[in-house]
Image (cartoon, rainbow over all chains, first blue to last red; front, side, top):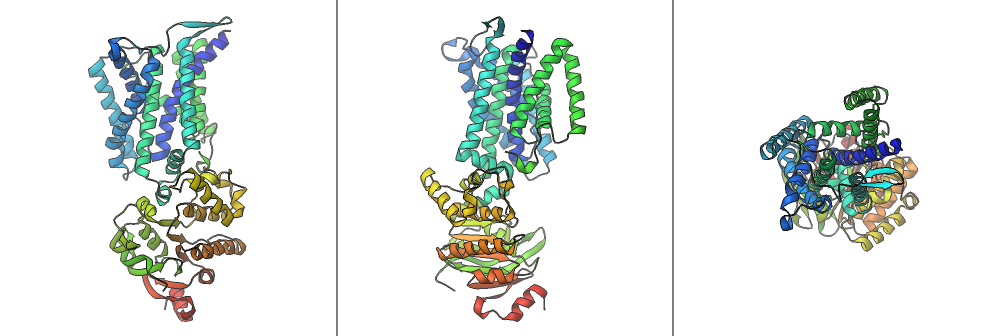
Length: 294
Length: 236
């Protein structure tokens, strides 16, 4: 039963990590640039949820589920701003320029959050309720199930958008060969902006989901960007399903090892495992050649 | 030359950095006409096609499509005006299915897109059975057909093809050029850059010879002097 309990907790954490990694890899594929602000965008989404909760209609705290669409839309707008400020002006420069500019954007977000919210941990409202469910002896936090369900819906929505719609085809074409996409009439700059908006919205959703169970502080992004980076690396650099699978594996590993040993040991072992994977299988556990990636 | 030119290039100069690859070059292509662009490696054929599309910036001259100056437009807007491009090396979207590779180039609604898809499959039956395959799994010839089909999905008025027979067996290259002839016969203006002179001349009504970025001959295929072709490829 404890194993099942840990599995649910791991899946819930992994589902939120998956959204972070998904947003990271979408931007990576569309721009060939590493968005190092992704972790701080998660933090921003969490604090946005904290800030919005008491101020929505009726001045009553609202369940996080009602906040979700608001956070998604506002964070998508923040993604557009990030693209306009930190990516588009530097897109023809070497990739390291965007690397630095997104680090700078992340630091601005961190400091802005410190000024506005202070350093104390904050909690966003739960998605549905803060209670637990007893499923035949298995006691599960409602928030954990809600995180899994919401993340699964968002990921399924992303898969549908990219796989079944003309916009998704254009986004994928832009990610695979931007010059050829332009030669096919695809407005590549618009596609890149949309990708940033999507990636940032996913980060914001992850922030809202995580900020209830795990709290949020202005400096929380540093850990999350490393997790996203590791997920994308072990999932196969640039692979969308690999990033999601990598995120789930990381979370299950983290929760599993933490329960037996401790969180610091789990983190240490996670990085050690990453090193082993990088040496033994540099293309990642689910790595595909770049030409095959979806 | 047939009718009014659909594509008119006037004194176009383009290159990379300080190096000029296309030097004050002029040519035109009419609707339903296939023009072969021949020349040795480095003559400027690919650069010319890319400059017409806007992928390589022009430093001088004009590009007109149906009388409209399009030289200041971004490549995607030129495509939306009616240019289609088949690049050297195919450059299909490898991780996307054949169907998605084709559909992504369409700007029409679902029903018309489906009709255009059928037309492409009718032109290249080998692609129909592979519609759900990822493009990287196709053979070179099938990828070339896919690249041509993808350009056709944009319903181009002018089709630019860069080395469509490169790396293909004679049989597959023949199939691709048969399609090129059919595309021109259907009313599209076709400008095809090729190193294989015999194959290009078999599909074209007119030939433009390039040497060091300049047009050294422009006329009907039947009146092409043999020494002009030799000079264009070997110098002289």
